[in-house]
Length: 127
Image (cartoon, rainbow, N blue to C red; front, top):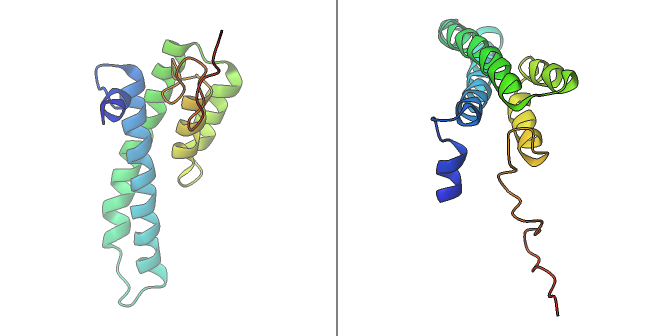
């Protein structure tokens, strides 16, 4: 639980970026569900697209701004910037980018790895 609270520490750029990336993915899901009911569902209704379309648009802008701030803060290479921006366009890809950025250390110190130890394996003994 402590690792979770550190990951979403809103006093850091990384915490804000993680939160906004997850919200962006959730808004994508809501928008996709709204589009289903607009074009295929019974009864057909546009309310989901109106609500989630606006929410997703605002969160998308927040994601781009957060990505710019994170890129500046963590000194991302141009390819990382590009991947972050592409991740905001493809549905649910912001979460995939977030996991990748955390695991590769692009969001600061890797949140999962500790001192070279791998999960499920004990550290080698020294004599």
